[in-house]
Length: 117
Image (cartoon, rainbow, N blue to C red; front, side, top):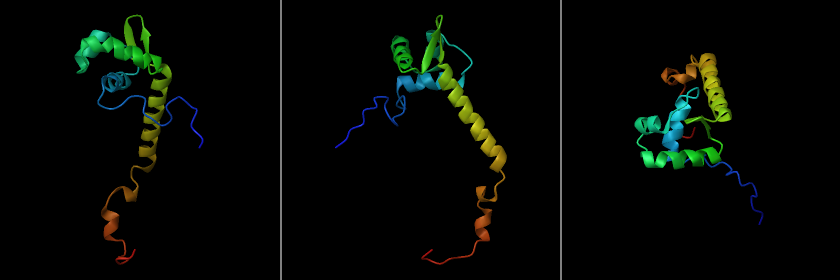
């Protein structure tokens, strides 16, 4: 039986929700153009100060965050990806936001196809 050699983690999310890493990364992703000190991240999250440095170091090893002087920020390529996703979603909303299938009123005019439809 073949096995997957790729060690990048495949489709696994970079951090698990509900973890310190997820909480810190969420704050950094919410402000991709800003850097935060560990103390500021402690104040903005429920992550204990004693865990902030270790967690940020692990995120840096994964390429998700970067350190600039004594401040931490989301990695540039991660920020660019998040911004691209947001812009894409905004474009979809602008293009299709008034789509008739977006509301449920169209179902009132739809013919009844019976139980087997």
